[in-house]
Structure formats: C-alpha cells, structure tokens
Image 1 (cartoon, rainbow, N blue to C red):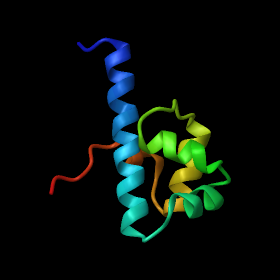
Image 2: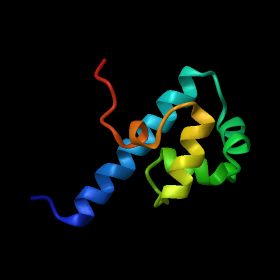
Image 3: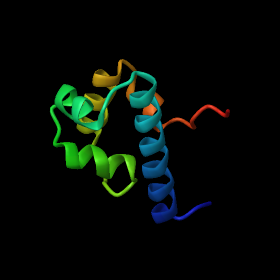
Image 4: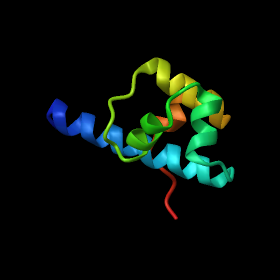
Length: 80
C-alpha cells in the first residue's frame, strides 16, 4: 500500500491535470475559471501545477465552474 504522502501527491497531480484539461477543452483561461469558481487566479495556477492542497469545497467550486462533478476531477484522466 502506498504511503499517504505519495497518495496525496498523486491526487494533487490528478486534480491538476483534470482541471487543466477540462478548462482548455472549454477554451477557458485560468482567470476566467478563477472568476467562475470564485477563486484567486494564483490558486488556480497552483492547483493545475499540483502545488496546492485542494479542499472539498474548492473541488466543488471548480467542478461547478467546469460543468462536471468533483469525482471527475479526482478520477484518472482519459488516455489519449
């Protein structure tokens, strides 16, 4: 079993990849996503770079702004 630190890092990367992918698919800038989600743009930058710990409340705000669910943000990104 993976230790909790490695799992947390993997989840942060997964969320960052998914947020970036969904934002780009919608042609949205980081600033536009931040405004829609009620977040600071710097926080969105850190989330996409996996440099921020994301609360459940922030996951919900991001998922609402991106038209998806929180579970989709923590799921494995689709393979290309």
